[in-house]
Each structure stands twice: as structure tokens, then as C-alpha cells.
Image 1 (cartoon, rainbow, N blue to C red):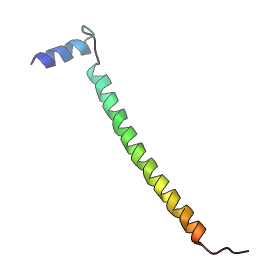
Image 2 (image 1 turned 180 degrees about the vertical axis):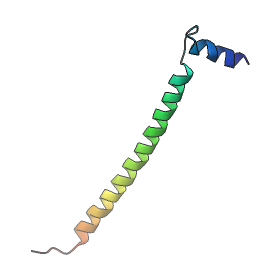
Image 3 (image 1 turned 90 degrees about the vertical axis):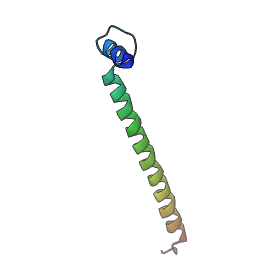
Image 4 (image 1 turned 120 degrees about the vertical axis):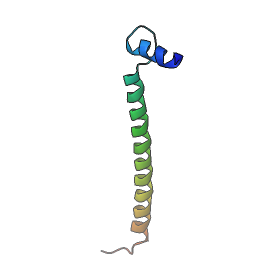
Length: 61
């Protein structure tokens, strides 16, 4: 109960610290960063795979 009261005071600007909206925003941004890192890793692996496939392909003039 004390934690809820403290958070309500933060939300009202009566206490220092992150508001609920700021905490939610940080949580959303952290999730987005995780998703982007995962997508970036997938793209790196796909790029390496296709680069190797291109090197293995016979040369044509």
C-alpha cells in the first residue's frame, strides 16, 4: 500500500522520481530496442547467408 501511495505522489508531482507514464514509456522503448536488436541480428545472418550463396555460385560472363 505504501508503494502505491508513493507512486501516486510521484504522479502528482509531490515526490521525486519517475511517474507511471514515464515508467510505461521506458518499458515500451526497452521492448522496442529488444525487437530491433532481434531483427538486426536476423538481417545480419540473412545477409551473411546470401553473401556466401553468391560466392558459391559459378561465375558467368
